[in-house]
Length: 185
Image (cartoon, rainbow, N blue to C red; front, side):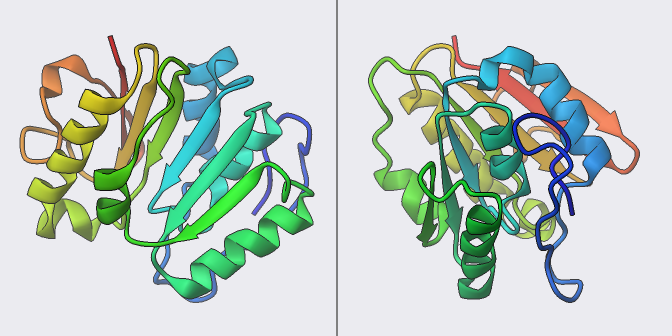
């Protein structure tokens, strides 16, 4: 795996072993960051269901002030810590070994500083726990300051089961992947 652009452009970092984790592809990551453009610069980034941390690492390379990686799998959390060290981002990245649903319930965002939230759960979460994902997203929408941006990724069409107020999201397709973006107003 590699960083696409920014301060660490072209630097490689470790991907997952086996096939249980599906990192966001280079194509989709590049598309997401082309949409976000300068919004990343100086912001705090939250990478929920972080997996390899690819989205948060890319954001750090593109100028995010800090990244918080929330991952419940111990091996994946260790992988993210190694990748932070490899890319020399240890001082700007924090890894929390916890469940994203539990974390989101307790999360208290900064009062006025907009953040960017990446939500890339295992795709099976959309089938098995669509209600929990919708609750998590609704909670974040209610809590986050104006100007914050939510970015969710899925392998299927987004809709009412997972997205609260689906008509308020900008949904795009990249091959077999769908990306939904929403700016908090």
